[in-house]
Image (cartoon, rainbow, N blue to C red):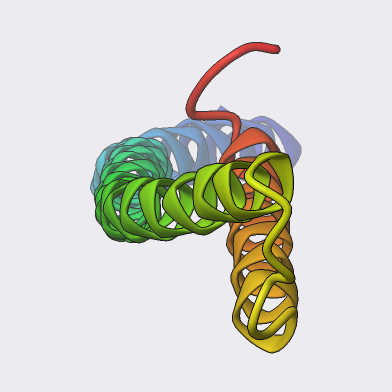
Length: 147
């Protein structure tokens, strides 16, 4: 064998050794890198899913709190209406009594002693009816009932 054949053979062996080293390096570096990449991607995907779950839970909690507040406000307004209706009933009875008394006195020919009480009763009655109207409007704004 000549020197040129020996150097050619040596070059071929060196090239094969480098290819083996390259394959070995790819295996040593590539597989862990691929595992790290898969781990990173799965962590990102799971993090996004967890974030979506947290957002959904927060949204549901906000809706629940909103419904509780709406229910509480509606209950307060219903209570106000019931109190106002009781007051209207008392005022209406007093007004009707005074009005009937005025009619009786006028029909008998006697002058009615005072219109002040009758006017105050009428004013109170209108005021309470206006309060109920405002409360009903608030309930409608809350969406608690339909007109």
